[in-house]
Length: 348
Image 1 (tube, rainbow, N blue to C red):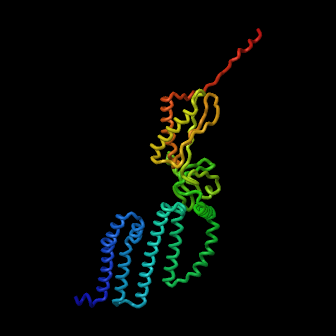
Image 2: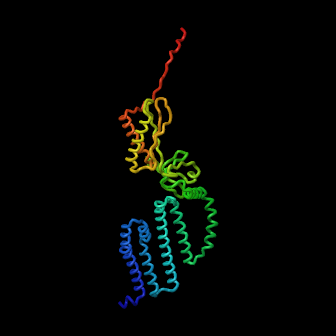
Image 3: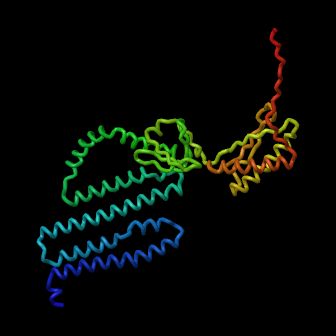
């Protein structure tokens, strides 16, 4: 026992191992218990906090053990100072990682609660992490007694050369930032470009925006500069609900009041079955024109989301056809009367 306490190297090694063991125990039992408690709550912010400090107690306890070991003796003053600097850097890096995890998780959770906030995209997350990482880097350099001012000057001069070499990349980056800040194209929106591409926006990255087509679910990659310069129709703004128009034609001898009443009843039945909630807009019937062989009308059905319109049309056409047959309402075939003239016989 006297050998262990009298030898500073053995005592220092014991302190380091004790710190590692304490970190493992805290991570396994204490943090694990808090993780179990967080999963039982309805809020997800406590899960975010527990997940952000994952494995950090091990780093802190190990750093504390090494710091205690350096105070035992047996090390030169210069080496002890360098070790303390490294330990401080490790602590700064750990808190920087925690801040990045918290920021990334908060960006993912905020849009679900407040639709007016910035959307959760890779570009926003990367920019926030870049800012936090830059602040952490400056703190590390300052802790290592490295002058930041000459470094910033060198980065400014080198940044001009990089900007000239990466014009397209920076153009897409700033276009992506403008798309996010404008809020006219958000993740989850269904858009259609004037060039023909359409689908749900899945992510806005530093160089491109990805959309997923419907219903084949293919991925389309569009450069941000192209998206920002195109004419885009957003079917999810100013609100996600929309009116689905289904054209129908009935015979000229039909009772139009009866046709309208039947169409409205079928529309309400289909919406209650497909949408599973009462829509904020009632279905409507609007007669359009006297067609060649029928009186044409449009049935307007509200859909809560863009993708629901296809199922609503499918179910409504089936139900309306069956109900029209039951009510004796005729959907006529296109009819045309063709007059044939007897050509004049050619002279003999």
